[in-house]
Length: 317
Image 1: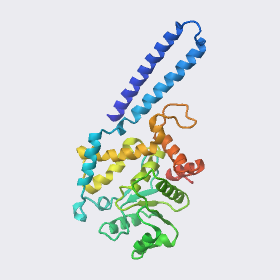
Image 2: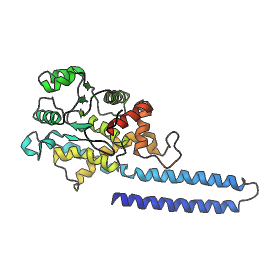
Image 3: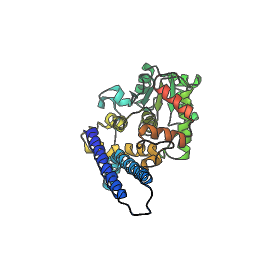
Image 4: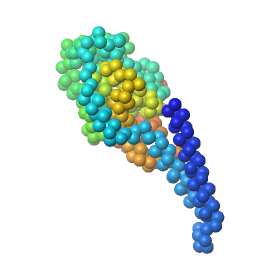
């Protein structure tokens, strides 16, 4: 239904821009003396028509990200209500309890990326996350919750986790909630370059798997042609796992706006209607915006982005 509505809105945009072009061309055909030559008039009309259409398409693509102030306040209230059980028996599966799952969004291949809660925190969830990751034959660990020293301390009593540090197949970077800060941009760059040079599959974790973990997954999913619905669905799966959310509940819709905020951050300046460098076609989609984000904000080189895409697709980087 969502895609049908988007298609209808796009058809409406085309109709409006066609009317706009016809009107301006008709006006130009009876322009007073001293006006630009007809061919120049036509060029101006075409340029303005494309600009109107691109802005309309961009606005339409981002319509889902527009949140009223009332809904934003309700979202914040819902976050304050969230309390998850720490007992395994309150969950339908080990995977839900550990918030463990494989990430296969867009054109991502199987056996490349997993996400979970912290597998070495020492709480009741950790052993489940560690066992599931071990069963998945994880090759490298990306810890977004700890410093290297904290990671080593946590791993000191868990031989399986310690082995990744010993073999050089782990990275620990502390990310906070300000994902657009220079500090976090540098951390994201570290993580992505680590992925290009270490053994897959990767286990990406923070504490619960809902913060920095979710943001990096969104960046990678957008790069791999996942659509907004897929990305938000994976983001919200953590809330389904932990709190038993149902998609029909109003709180599901409200909490999903926090995921929309993350997508808007990835979209950056392109979300305001500005075309990407070298773009001459329609308004850029999520993949193009993710590429622009990685180049401009994360300072990844084009070759690195191509290698990352091949890695996630299951090809040789």
